[in-house]
Structure formats: structure tokens, C-alpha cells
Length: 67
Length: 188
Image (cartoon, rainbow over all chains, first blue to last red):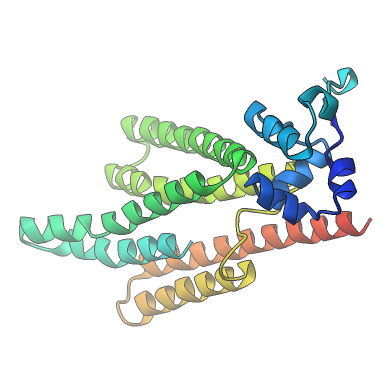
């Protein structure tokens, strides 16, 4: 899954740790999502979308090649 | 890790006493002495998993799955060999007592590998530095081995404790290697 989490986080000038705190997850989880190593659960994806004021489909894009 | 070391220490101390005690109630008491540290370890593990986020829970699940599979194979092999009288009943009983320590060690290693796959470090994030934890554990087990050998003349117990200390050294080297690899990949 491709995502725009890093782009939006940098736009808000937040560190991975700050974003992790806002999402109530570990910094490692934020890093794994940003690098595409981990796809978040639906509730976490909604939480990220709500935090950045974006719809989920604007944040995450299904990556056919990775499957 | 400390609770696990306490369990092993209590087990190595209580097991010879349980076998040599005459009264049944004393035998039972000594045999069940290692149970409270085990219950404490289970409680710590449950607390840790419940406090972790979804990615950490996934790595814990992978760790538990791998450990359960490995320990089940170990149990089945020991059981079959004991049933066929290849292993004696005492060895099979001792193998049962090592199931939980074995499970926690494999669980920790598998969880660390799974965490690394997701770009995280191992499960030790807060509290004492990992190297110091390993050092304490190695010193504790080595001291126990020395005590059992010099004060009790228990060669079997001493070699078990020493073997465990060597096992922890190997684990420490493994985690050190993982950390070094991670540092290298982050630099690149």
C-alpha cells in the first residue's frame, strides 16, 4: 500500500515521535507505515485520516505491484 | 528477563531439595516453589502485550506462534522418545519443566526478528539498557553455577546454569548483531 503519511507529517512539521503520540502508537509503527512495511488497521487508518483532515482514499493507495 | 532468571535460579535450587525431601508435604512445597515466578512472568508478558500497539501486537503474535510451534515439536519429540523408553522418565519430566523457559527464549528471538522485519528494534524499549540486562543475567547464572559447584558439589545443576549462561551470551551476541545491522542500514 502506498501512502502520503510522511508527506503530510512533514507538511505539519511533526516528528515521527510527535505523530506517534497523537495517534497513540509507537514511533516504530509510524516509521513502518511511512516506509510501507506495515499497512495500518482500518481504525488506525481512519484516525490518521481524521488527524490530517483527509479521506482514507486520499491517504492510502492500493499498490498492485506489491501484492 | 529477570523474572525468568529468578524462575531458573529457584528451579535449580528447589529441584534437588524436592527430590531429597522425605515428607510428602515438603516435597510438594519444594516442587511447587518455581510456580510463583512463572505466574509473575506470564502476568508481565500479558501486561506488555496489552499495553502495546497493533504493530507490536502483531510481532508478539508471530513470536508466540513460532515459539508455540517449536516447543510443541520439542514436547512431541520428548514424549515419543520417552514412550519408546529411549529417554528415561526423569529426563522427560525435566524436559517438561524446561518448556516454559524455552518458549520465552524462542518467543523473544522470533519477536525480535519479526520487529526487525517491520523496521523496528527488538522488544526492549524502556527500562534498563539491553546490554546491561544481558550482563546481569549472565552474571546471575554464572554466580549460580559457581555456587552449585563449589558449595553444593552439584555438577549437574552447575553445568545446567553454566549452559544457560552461555546460551544468554549467544542471545546477547545475536541481539548485538541485529542492532549493529540496523545501525548500518540506517546509516546507508
